Image (tube, rainbow, N blue to C red; front, side, top):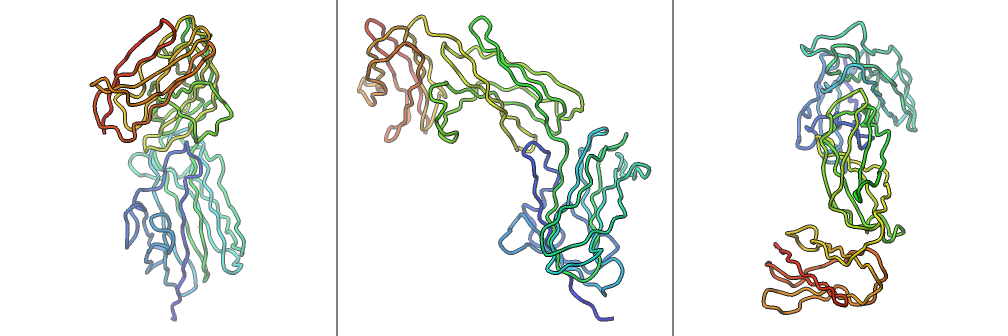
Length: 366
């Protein structure tokens, strides 16, 4: 029988930043053959895989030789770290060069730790989906992983002669942040937050910025990491977290959480505002970060309207930078120090306002 060539493109996207990266890292390095983590089933033969032009390391093309009858191609990927009781969505977007009726099926097979199929609770629809010349999305929504399930086998099966683009989205239930708030106690900021569920949650970085000009564009804000709290990893029950920031001086601040997955993906929470009041004394804080390269931030407090200067000196006493030189209203401020043209070493910075003088050291490491 005469054989024909079936080409389709499979594109993998994570969809939601919090979600665990369910697709295998094989797409990052493969150049020929089946990408790591993907398996060609016995149904459908003579498949070859290659990268799609213009989509290096993020898409694959599978060429299936078929006689045009029966199953023309079937392949799968096993997804690990499934949590029993969690809900999962499985979606596929398809578009064909021509409209083809009953073009494909897809399903999910839950498995236990020994890779045995949990046949009584698998998600295996018998629907045959049609491709058209515009994108269409087909879904298995809110599929609950049964007891003993630790992984799921994701299967795509193609029928008939066609060229089909497939955009495959695997979306587990993400880390769901249900509350994030701040309370001032004993002149310190106390942050609390709660999650309803967690998947692959490494933890939370706590970030802070002085509330000086909220209209500044997000990309221009200088957020500082002030702490870290470990996450619960995988959980389908509520978890509560807290963090006390003892390093903030008086003034108004914004805080946010940077939630990190074990694979390095992250997302940010909303921002919460904390007001630690007006300063009662002049003060110069230690720069952050320290050591630093190439920039660092210096916070200082002004308790009464005064002319303020902040200068930076090298270890020979030579002035290398003038950071502040003007009259300031009562409040807490931040000065930025950029070190263009300066060598690595220890530097002295000094704040002077009336009779108040304070000096600190900082280290530039290039």
